[in-house]
Image (cartoon, rainbow, N blue to C red; front, side, top):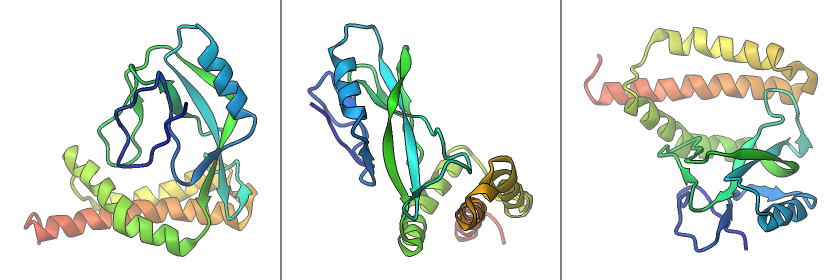
Length: 197
């Protein structure tokens, strides 16, 4: 009934009418399952549904730092929806009529700093750099100075990270660090390619 996939199998051949795409660190809350079954039985002309995601940081649901409601388009008709050609932060394309569900996905966003750093350094950082290169972006001083500072301030103050205690501080700092390291990796790539001295 449901097709479950992970990164790397975003557009699998699927013989079902509907697909529910969840990642390995996600689960569905109990009230979401019957709601999905109801929508599948309806004859309404809807191509897909957005689902709110609860992001768990060290086991606690955090609503600040732009983490909630965190709408994700994960339940859609197989014939219409296709994942965009991005290595990271892909989104579903090709849907015309999209509505929202009441239930939630649960996302274990951060359980271990070591695991997070390992995944970032071996996967996400390289994927982000590849996306920047596809868009023709080059390294700039602004990207490792003003950009990360602005990111921290926006997440901590504007997005309410301060309300989450250390979790919010860490998340805001992590967003800034993510940006610095991505552009540092881009700088490193340009050095190796002889694009700068």
